[in-house]
Image (tube, rainbow, N blue to C red):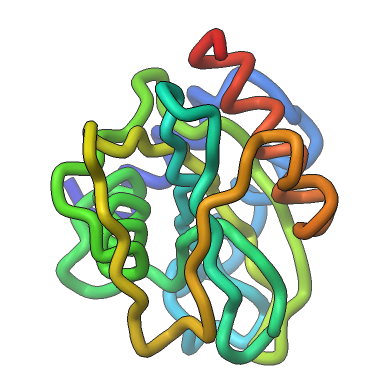
Length: 173
């Protein structure tokens, strides 16, 4: 199965955000290259909010280009076989934490936002940090920091706060 086919299946199975979900599906129907950064009409991206339920915190990155506190994520790469794999790869690369595990149940939310390169149609997952996880800043970040769940809405934009709320609901934390 190709990444394109996986994206279609994942989006069709996403049980909420019907209008936005349909916009993602319409985008892929209109753009066979709609998963790749080269698609200037916009592209599907994959991200994951790294959480540590035992300590009640989320790991955010101060994005190097956008200068905003965000979840880990980014563009799909040719080696990605699924959106979940892309999200996990991005979270692992940007957090430096081995052993992250995606929260079961597929994407937590969808979020469409404009960036300097194009519209990002982000498929957002959540990842659980293993016990004793130690983060390591990557070259893509200006900073990397754990925030309590209560701090996240104060430092990050509404899309990250919505992702955290949906993650907490999914995980029951």
